[in-house]
Length: 317
Image (tube, helix red, strand yellow):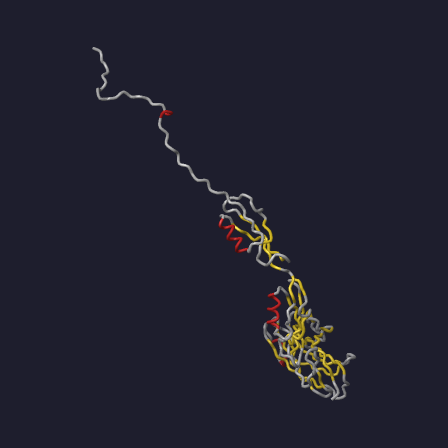
């Protein structure tokens, strides 16, 4: 008995439809993103240039600040990436920005305080070298003279010179063998110099006593016994007064690093001392050893191994 395949009367015969005959669906399309282009930043303020660049999805980098006589301060002088060049989002546009003119005018600072003068100079890009001088009439910290004169045209970074009153204190900052520093010397005088503008010299009369106070500072713990020698020499180098004492009447073996010691002297001038210029010298030596400690740095106030405190003028009474 044979078998015969019978098709269900409700089933439709399968038909193969080619893919090419299938209806096609439209594929989604994306809108192309605009390609950022480096903007022209020359002459723009650096803040404005940053906003322009960041609005395009780029970044601004100030790679150089330069003085320029024509481009105002904070304006873009040039850019490393040429304007119009296509870039990728996040790329960097490097620029050079102006610091403004390199030339400045020297301000008038004479008569002002040293701190105020230095701030004024710094605001113009100038640095100050300060020389402190003894003065019996102008208060401490007041600028006596300036160089160059006010109104002089200078370059930013130039160094100018200020002469500043230290009052009746002589600033020394003398380093003796990296052990002890002679920082200052107070030298009041009863005879006014009579001049305000010029650098004065302390004046005394023969037979008068010079009141001198030295200020010492230990740079380290001192384990040796030192003696201070204070001398007054005439114009020919002859000694007319000398006093040798432990500084501050206290053994230096007790000094610890950072100690400040006040050391007062009363130097009586001979009544027969002739008028003229005299020098006050100070030195330190170890007790029992007649060898002075070397003066390593006294800012020009040094004679051999002695500190030149100041010159004084003896005048006829």
